[in-house]
Length: 145
Image (cartoon, rainbow, N blue to C red; front, side, top):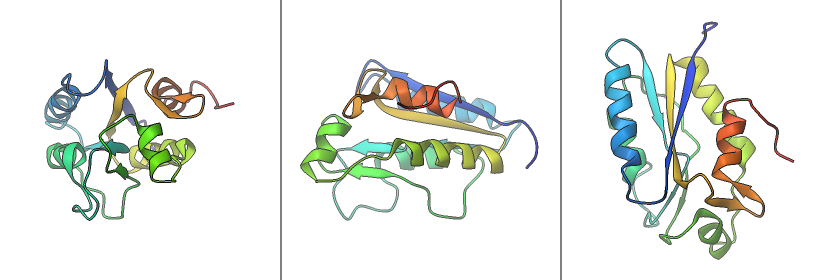
């Protein structure tokens, strides 16, 4: 869109602490004047075969004032455990760079993005990669090693 768009990252100390509630509130307030989209890139405890968007991701989509027409990258895992463990158990990997690219792409077509992370800042996503790394990358503060 050629204009400055913002990305806000929401995290907490873990599961069930109100991240989705805060993210929805941000979307509601911000969405009164802007086209904003909620994005939950990783979610565990989602049953295989669920709707394309389920759980918290669906809640954020409902709270969004801008709806993306194309498919959005969304990692879901059945086990309600840390993302790195859930991915390992399903013999899958989480590509953090693809999540970063997706968040930035969403920011290019909207006025803003609220990204809700899975768990707290130190929740592992892969060997040596944490939510804090993802948050820094999304906001262009640091490259992953």
